[in-house]
Length: 446
Ligand SMILES: *Cc1c(COP(=O)(O)O)cnc(C)c1O
Image (cartoon, rainbow, N blue to C red; front, top):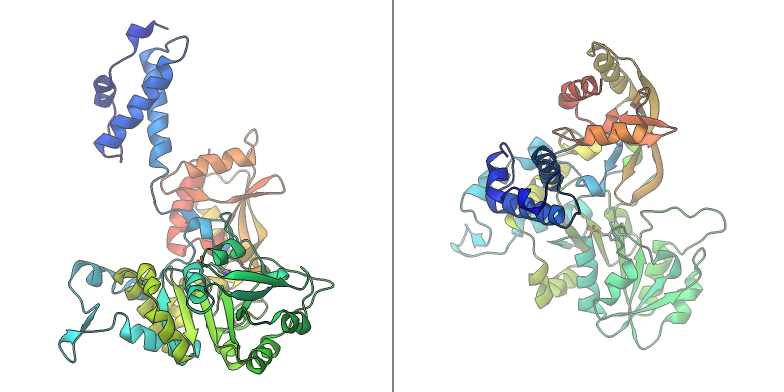
């Protein structure tokens, strides 16, 4: 221990720090802040200790950089882990479009300025069953845009059972009110009838809104009007009826996994809803986007709103989304869209992989295969459970949460979960080509 004068200078520490990913100014900032903290302490640690603390601070900052991780949570659309991963076919044009000039807003037929996402809009309309479609940043943006366009200063009638929080502290009602529309809440949390909507309709009504309860389940004494009933009511009163599907699947998911049916935009629009919005990176399995689909005049009105410009997607998103939609339209979605493929992975395949992983370890003490349940996630189908396979880790004298910490320190970090006093890695959401990394990391635990 030394006095204040023995605190090393930034340069000396920088000289001893190699192999960091942080750019020099960021690195210097981390070192400075570390030294400031040490300066405020009563006793100054020795140089080795200071260096160790600086290195730990650098690692902490490095780990906040966006990077690839192995998802061993079994949650297929994990919002904290980047939602839907993209497959090679979805990424195919990203490199070309990003590195070269392209026809983003140029019409190759006329040689003049063209519509942004012209083809994509046609393809999205086709895939979602709308007369027309368009795309913005995300589903929350799509919802605000709808309200701004059709309900500014007016009332939006919505069931109390649908005023949900969508994660990250964001609540649908707050997002909606930020548009300048007023919410007219009807019914009770668990029950809302078509009468409740009918009674709420008045001169100030802008539109009827149904929000898909995607991230929670209500069971027991519950009821809500169907899309059909709401469509009829809207028609009687010449009102606009919109559904926020949130997760929005484009294909019947129950045919892919043992899960319940998730409403598709095609069905909802067929049942008389005028306009729907949904996320691109939830069950659709594409990049982050908010897709709007429905009546042609409504989509046109939305595109004519100046605020539409503030929410437009970047060319990379449009490129990946175009490939994604093409995969659906060519009937190749299950092959090309990882979110769908992961859902459908048979348990036997996971069992074979799990057995091979354990065989690949010199010493598999404390490791075993167990049953797990994968979830769809992404605020989608909370009760849907897909039987899965886990690697269970029980190491004497190492708490499950400490196993989790050690695995998170790896490059790439491996994320699993603690259940039943055991650390578990669900193999469904780990890609087969990552199995060798899992073996290596498990080996490293001993
Ligand atoms: C997830 C979700 C949203 C928000 O979608 P983003 O694409 O993340 O903006 C909105 N509404 C519902 C019902 C959702 O499930």
